[in-house]
Length: 94
Image 1 (cartoon, rainbow, N blue to C red):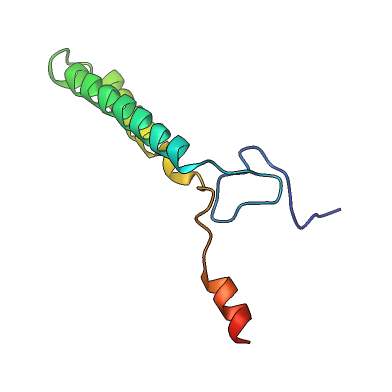
Image 2: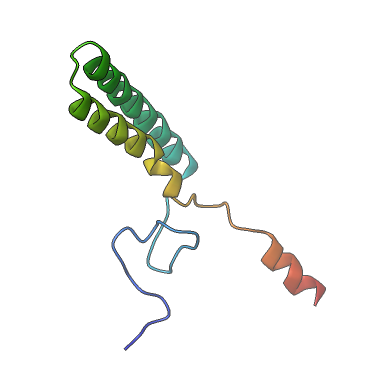
């Protein structure tokens, strides 16, 4: 019952795109990066404020970790049109 092309939640994630996933365009990727970086930076600043000014280390650390996770989120998306050219070149030579 194993399939070669599994459909899974978030199929555009990962090093290789499956046939069922579509990926994202370059403009969508840029928008995701900007929004997540600004949101992550805002959470990071709030976390530092909580730790230094309010002396709330637990909530501050949670905000910093959440901010870093949000800032790194779009790096897992695969961009449409950015396939490797090495496979096509290898087929033409052989």
